[in-house]
Image 1 (cartoon, rainbow, N blue to C red):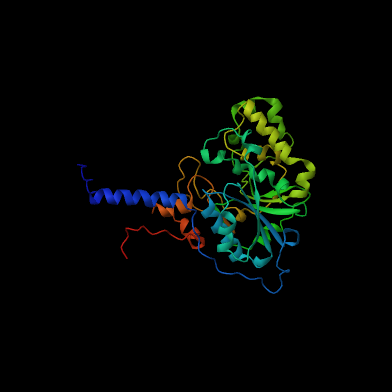
Image 2 (image 1 turned 120 degrees about the vertical axis):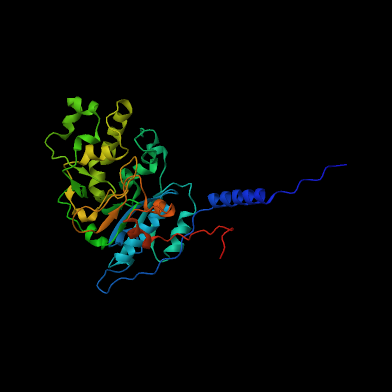
Length: 341
């Protein structure tokens, strides 16, 4: 006679339910609520239906890890833009995430945007390990390939990281005078520039002379205005690739995609007021401790570094400035089936 199956204990039922809930949550893409609709002011150009007639072109990357931050960043751009309907967004993403189009459209039904698939194989063979694993993802290097990905009619684009919010009109940033250069960004000339390269680099005159005759300063690549037409003509993507290939043969830097940008552009960057990149709010790349604002006005807050505001808020260990990010968060918080109303 077969033995009867033992009845599961209440604790086992709870553990099985939690496991099922966690597996379901992990397999489903995050859900975001619909943002408020934002409209052009009367003196704006017509709403842009294509990138070619956009008042401002914006480029960002989309991935699973930072999607929540990207959605908040988009929200902040629209909320503070005088001409939100005339802004066109270019999202660079892996083709393995088919739900991105529906996710963006559901939260921003009137948004003008395109998703440009990025093939990881284009860059994966050139990536060397850095001090933080998140910096080694192929999509982190996609900004170097924007001139190849964007339509030929786009001549200027504002690139934005996913861990920031704007509190000012992006049109002001987009109109930065480039003065014949391919790139504009806030520079920080008091930073120790030698820190971004290894002693091997500085000890080799044939390498360190790359900065000869240039007033090379650190700049953060999370906020840039790019002349993509000039970028294509001058072959800057190929120049960045050359330094990445050298890095695979001899270790000349430790920090992801930033040093190749510095090697090509440092000392050749048009000035942007530092209020457009109050960076470092995520702390350093190892511990991600809380940091305050730099002195001066603020147009953009950037949680560069290890600590991200959504992670710290979810863990109920936020830094004071994370409260400034929270109003732009569109995530629909999932409720546990065991919570009590």
